[in-house]
Length: 274
Image 1 (cartoon, helix red, strand yellow):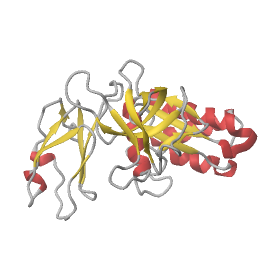
Image 2: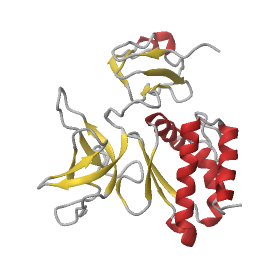
Image 3: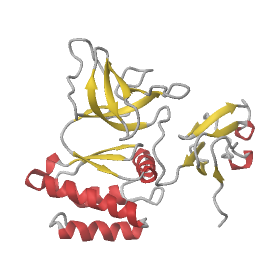
């Protein structure tokens, strides 16, 4: 098996690493890639540049190319990233949000929510969580990152779940695992099918279905929000168990078979599931 192509910021993606397909669908770019020029006739004539370090993968079926970042790198906001941010304080027009612990606050418009008006906008306090999309990152040193909890083209909270996150618990994972979890959860695969080497969430979903299942939101900034409120008296134990499973998968780089064993072991220790 050939070694993956590793790119550094500013490197161009070789044309032979772009998906070769006859599909009329436009080429889809994952985070970390920038389109410099394009051709109306062929993907191979597109010129792409990397904006961060990572390795290239392609999906001919979806006509997509992605740059997979390395797991332990610090998070760098990129337009259209889905992230979990925490409210730090508010001003007249904005909520000032923490995206990572050691970077400047991002701005979230107080009306940047589905159906929000001055009378109906959410009343968020310090410490509250939101699932948001990176709307813009500005240019130059000190540029402000702007967030939104709606799709600016439709005014809707797309994909589902954008907006305030009520209850639940947040776990920290590497940015690499966060990116893989997002790709796996956005796939149309059947439950239990391996996507990008991950079965952890689908396996947990099967095991915890009898308890009412759980909700999850994954941020590219290395945050995973988990809500097991439907599990009743087992909600706290189920939430902690999911966090332990994610940590084991991340820290030990478990393969799919090992992920399934880890889920069974942890749920058994927590006296949960079947």
